[in-house]
Length: 304
Ligand code: SF4
Ligand code: SF4
Image 1: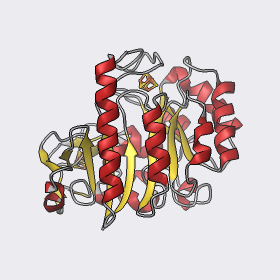
Image 2: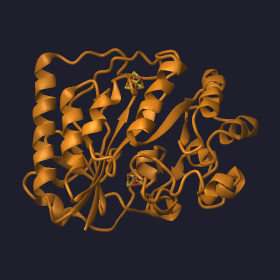
Image 3: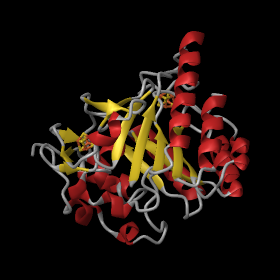
């Protein structure tokens, strides 16, 4: 059995101050950090012991995890387990990546976001160069705000072609055709992000071969549907796994709709699903596909 696990503990603090983020410069009190550390240790113990499942883990902290030693340690230890196919984390890359030298590069990966205004491009690129040197898989992304376009272009130009650059549509922003084309020139898969996907009653892998786990072990099908379907630590998650249709009207976040079956994104991102790297990048056929033809596979248009 293959299972993708998206884990999010209590941590909700970050060293950066992005104007578009509710966790900017938030500080967690020491007791919450202790709780987060203990919750992660419990989760790592569960993952280590669950050897009958082929696990892929993505840490999706509300804030930044890699400035905390326990996330770095968890990633290193999980990366060496034979039944863990992938262990990845969403990160702003602020922390030095040297610790990754102790991880297995065959299974560890990063989903890195560049936040212009919080870090210089040169510093961010130096982090990317260090990851390339270490042989660690990673994608790099930027939020598609108009004020980020020049920096995103410069980043794309500076990164080697083998590094996939994704663009997330900015929340609440409607893109003109011209704007969409500009961002699609940087990320040929931007069309998947630019409009929300109609998901109600559509089959989704979430709750079947992908789950969302909170620090206390609460299992939900995904981060976007609050209904609890089991708990990781009492074993009830096993009987909860079954084919399910989505109960939300739309799904507009990559870590959700990548599991929406009609979109077929598990094939597009085969081998790099959690760290957001298209299969075979930079030679995947999708890299030559126009936004219009991507749109034909099932994206909704505004107003649909
Ligand atoms: S780096 Fe991420 S978590 Fe931190 S403030 Fe920016 S968007 Fe929020
Ligand atoms: S489509 Fe999105 S919201 Fe619906 S079940 Fe799948 S991941 Fe969750």
